[in-house]
Length: 92
Image: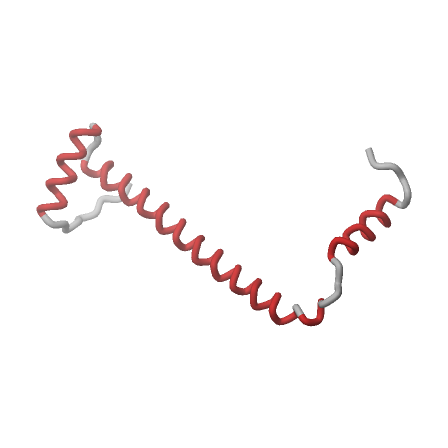
């Protein structure tokens, strides 16, 4: 474990001391848990932003190739692939 010096306001320190007694943790453990929770929240936000960007990219691609696919029946294509894979055999 690494030891660090940390500067925080008296207000925050009072809250740390109040809650550490309530949940029976040391200051260090409470601050560590708070940081871990914050990192989980940040990672979730980063994931959501990446997901939004991916969706925007998909929409851009769909708009770009959409006209080329007019009249194309995806369901029919899936049926053709499925039927050719089974080659007339009965499915289990």
